[in-house]
Image (tube, helix red, strand yellow):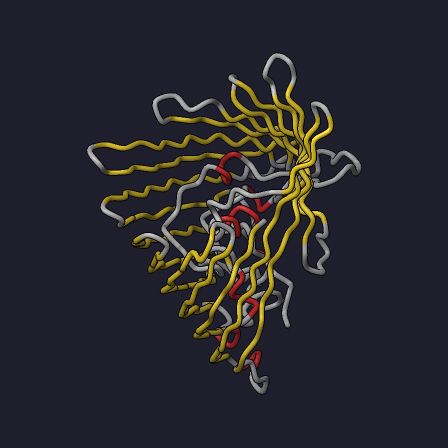
Length: 365
């Protein structure tokens, strides 16, 4: 059983969206909300590898589990402002036992998030439909196909090799402050600031480290003549050390829905880094009919080879066909077939390709 997952909370929750239940304990003005999810996938995999992994047998059946428990105390002041805290406990054994942890302040003015959480650019991204519970952009397929770690490197996670949900220079869940405006005529804007890449209360990084991460984003949601439109755009920059190049990230996404069908895609790009520059995009189509939904999603990611070969690229292509059935408000089951292919231009001995056929179940509370 493999449980070293790279799946993000935001992506994981797309598989169990709509579940409204949670345990709430009230004490005067204070409310404690306890919620979370448990998702498990059983899959059969066929893997083809280059010489680097030759001799190892990666074919067969395996199980992947992804789970979190969220503790959310909150209170509402007399003036209507709501103050809350979100502490997310990983349900898997990992080095990141506590995931995001932050404070929220919300009201008519919008919402402020302070603490260890993703940027507004990440959180407001619109991407292609994907009803699978393993997700083309979550890197969870590495639980079945061995292209992570020493083969693909860290750039798979939050980088253009593995997602359009980018974080500039791959800083993830950093200590930052973010503001989300109220939605006006379907439009919402946001801005984030992080002093550095630190996720906890450690030493202040000095000017030998990239600092002052600023992200801005906009998200639109509206309906025109029965056509649902969702769109996003984002840009991020930071200050590199002296004589360095400032890293930048930008992206855009669009989805259009009508008569049960949804068409969509997104694009993201990283520039100004030594070993993380690249681009990624996804496209897909989805269909929903009552409790049943379907999707076909294609992802294509590329970045600079982390092994440092001049001008060389590494790339990842993933396609997933999925179906999901909502059994109850808090429980869904699904099935998928996926093909994922990792290639390194400079070192083709590292190439890996796998086909996965699996079933999943997700319970939320």
